Image 1 (cartoon, rainbow, N blue to C red):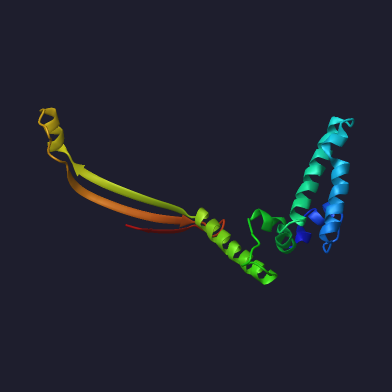
Image 2: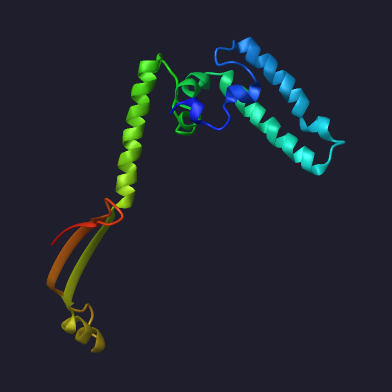
Length: 173
């Protein structure tokens, strides 16, 4: 995902360009954090304090991402990449590795969605002949005779909706 698709990017929150140095990010954060800090808003109306508190939280979040290793993920995938739990490490040292990791994550997420949309069902039916067992218990004979299995059947099916108009069902016994 491209960061430009987001409503407001962390770069916009801090008012710095995408190629800002760590020092520029830190200075922008300090300036905005001082302006929006809740302790500085004590004399303002309740509504203005609430807006300021939200802005302060957004500024903190932007600084946390842009000042650390998460910045590389954010630059490639935006907030979605951060929310997806992407990580940077020795095995993800460049953008190609990050893209490959992201595509693998997307494939797993798609498979999980398909699995969640499927409705698997299983039925097991066992018929037991227990007349002798019940008679033994009724007459006080212990231990009673074991019940006998008369029959057993199992079936399973999977139902899935590939579209709003169609339902796919697979089953077997």
